[in-house]
Amino acid sequence: MTAPKKLHVKTYGCQMNVYDSERMTEALAGTGYEATDRPEEADLILLNTCHIREKAAEKVYSDLGRLRPLREANPDLKIGVAGCVAQAEGAEIVARQPLVDLVVGPQTYHRLPDMVARIERGEAGLVDTEMPEEDKFDHLPTLRTPAAKPAAFLTVQEGCDKFCAFCVVPYTRGAEVSRPVARLLGEARALVDRGVREITLLGQNVNGYHGDGPDGRTWSLADLIWALDDIAGLERIRFTTSHPNDMTDDLIAAHGECAKLMPYLHLPVQSGSDRILKAMNRKHTAASYLDIIARLRAARPDLALSGDFIVGFPGETEADFEDTMALVRQVGYAAAYSFRYSARPGTPAAEKPDVPVEAATERLHRLQALITEQQQAAQRAMVGRETNVLFEKPGRLPGQLVGKSDYLQAVHAEAPETLLGRVARVRVTESKTNSLAATLI
Ligand code: SAH
Ligand code: SF4
Ligand code: F3S
Image (cartoon, rainbow, N blue to C red; front, side, top):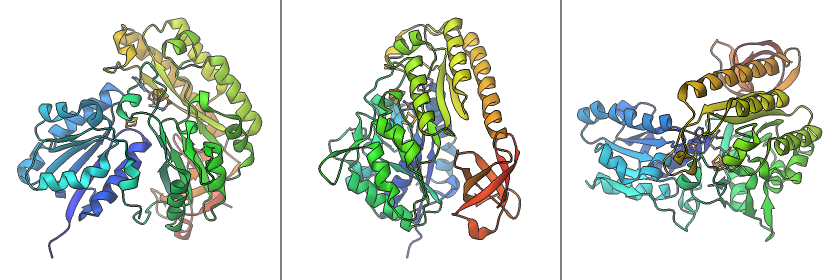
């Protein structure tokens, strides 16, 4: 018997890419590829890429350059580029980096086993960036590998129809598509059978979910969450990423009523200035966002919030930026992600003149300092309190396990290994820089 071929996948970007990488690994397992963490022993290396900011996209090329010595050591090594850079740049990737044997977009990776078979036979420079009518998930293996982790992702919705002026996602992922409810419940049950205790529902615009229900109705995300709530053994439900305009009443209510739905919500607003929000084509205002937050907190008073911010969007003045700072102060985030605006080819905002880089960088630092302060305050507020933790892996010190609180904070505690993959009650004793220390109750 020949030794199994080895596949190394490197994942960039968002959680949806993490999910896709797992599915690609499974699809290729069917053709005899075994996953490895070590690129130097791989027969096939796949980079699952992100196009959201220039830095992320350029990193792919520097990483590809670094694969040259591996190719020299093993001329049979095959190299593929998947994900959003693949979709956006297609054949240009092979032109710019001839090491690349195949390019496959996020909507056609079910064809990966065929493409790999072709490059194994000596074909080169294959490119598939179609956005086919067929659903790739119908063509992918449904039997998932035994879950190594108690917390799993499940893609329920893909693509985006919102067209924010700065964003490539509608172009790289295509139009919004929701997967049918029956398929998702089947996949969720299979995950739980394999030991998964927490499922995070994924979508670029996940709260816009509108899938075909088994009853012939169109189901909302809240309907789906309530159906997942009935799965015995599933203990925690999360979802990301949401758009403020799709925060419907039933979903807001679920935060107060569904015990398995965790009290943490990532709700990006991008800016606190209505002038900039309009230029971004966000179709909401700072006030309408704050109103949604108020309704969410009325439903679930201990809800932890996170958000995304873009600093230095074309035309942003110091006064606009101050509006963002004011909004952040008003909300009080448990965590938040902030980025300097990056002009992306093909997006409407890319036509407009940039804010000088020094000004944008200086604003970013101010915003990040405020966010860090808020995150630390949220962590300190946990000290002395009880919370649940899903222990996901061994900690850095012997005898320690680490996991996430209900509020998605990292928590470590001395705990027996039998608690791995289980939810336990702890009391928080100390707030560290990026985690909480706790003791079992
Ligand atoms: N679908 C999600 C997230 C999209 S990408 C949403 O609508 O919120 C994740 C984050 O990257 C965005 O929320 C935004 O803050 C940031 N981002 C997107 N395009 C960007 C760009 N051109 N420059 C800088 N940050 C960007
Ligand atoms: Fe991008 Fe806006 Fe769609 Fe989010 S809602 S993926 S930021 S276009
Ligand atoms: Fe990046 Fe594509 Fe996700 S651009 S953020 S990997 S949807």
